[in-house]
Amino acid sequence: MARGKGVWRSLTGRLALAFVALSVLTLGLVGAFSYAFTRAQFRQLLTEQVRTELVQELQTYEALHGSTAGFREHQGKGPPERSGPGSAPGGQDRPSAPAVGGPFTVLDAQYRPLTPSTGHVAGHTLPVAERQNLMPVPDASGTRTIAYLRPTGNQPPQDARSAAFLNSVARAVLTVMVVAAILAVLTGGLLARTLLHPLRLLLRAIHAMQRGERVPRLPRTGPDELGEVLVAFNAMQDEVNRQRHAQRQLTADIAHDLNTPLSVIGGTLEGLLDGTFPPTPERLTRLQHETRHLTALVRDLRFLALADAGELRLTRERTPVGPLLRDATLRFQELADRAGVTLHATLPDPGPDAPVDPVRVVQVVQNLISNALTHTPPGGTVTLNARTDGASYVVSVHDTGPGIPADVLPHIFERLYRADPSRHAPGSGLGLSIARSIVEAHGGRVTATSTPGHGTTVTFTLPLQD
Image 1 (cartoon, rainbow, N blue to C red):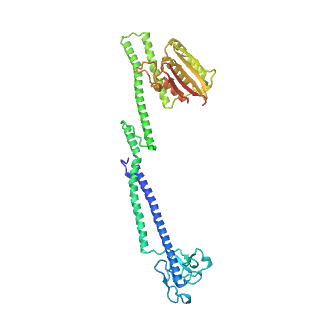
Image 2 (image 1 turned 90 degrees about the vertical axis):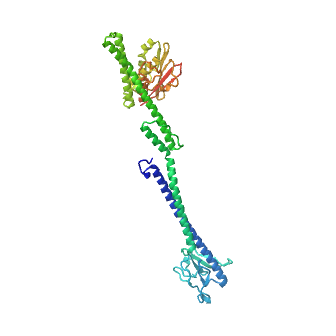
Image 3 (image 1 turned 60 degrees about the horizontal axis):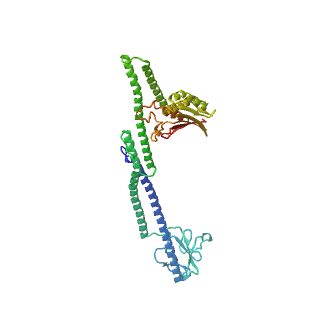
């Protein structure tokens, strides 16, 4: 699909790039969060370790000296030390070189800092308002408080091993991100090719259709939307092939229907002109008949062409449909009598009014009755029925002819279709197609049912409201 364009301008490249961008962004966020969380947890662990060591040092110091006076803050930097002589009141040792910037300030039981702290001087009592969050330090027996630890908010000191641990964590996270990004590139490319495989099949099929080549049916690649697109394409291709075949058949049928009368007319005129045939009334009548057939065929084809183009104009007006049907039936009474066929109509009186084009509705009924009389043998019956069914007016024409085989019935409304392959049946073969076009232009529908040996019924509906 990337033929003639850069890979990153193709849909495959864009999808792969989207996978990579999303993966890198996600991995970056996860990596940064993981490193920050690990670093925070590690510092919290170090702080807790310093607190535990301070508590142990204070308890040891207090057990050895009887008080915490002179305790020198250690905070993880080695074993507890005793300050130099003269530093503590009452002749005890005083703190010397206290650690500054540790996570805790050590206070004695009277809330006096044993080491300098921010804003406070060692030996001065901590104000009551600042005694929140103090952590009491019990003696070894846990019966009395010997000191307090006051969090400073400073980070615990980080030795070389701690720094090395955090650096190794950072390198591990970065390595995982790089490996995952590479896997995302490979996976994104593979997924993009897999997901777009149906589209590539579809594109090749479309190009083949444009070149006029035969296109095999596309396989359904899966139950997803792209698989449904391929199924829809197959259905469209079947319909296109059917339309192409119907178009070729229609062209051949039109050529056949035009050639037959033209041959008769041309041969007869040639014989009349060279004196072979005398101009008898019978020959002139046959010429007139063939000319009328050609005129009717051309008129019907033009009518269907207008219907296909959506240019079929209807002059609708509310009209009592019953009288229209009765008049149309009476026009065929003489023809039915000559054919020995009984023609009668069962119509409601007066029947409803409907918004129809009276001329076109009469044309539909005439086409159906004419077709029924053509296929009904002498002694048979053609019956016209009409009734109201809800919001529609239902009209049916039933004949007692030989019926239509089931495999032929779906095609009887196709243009120029004749069940008789010899095409010796009278008429243009467009009557039912014209009837369907007129009924559908009114918003109705036309159907046909038939039982071989028991006749055929063609039914159409007309809406009673606009």
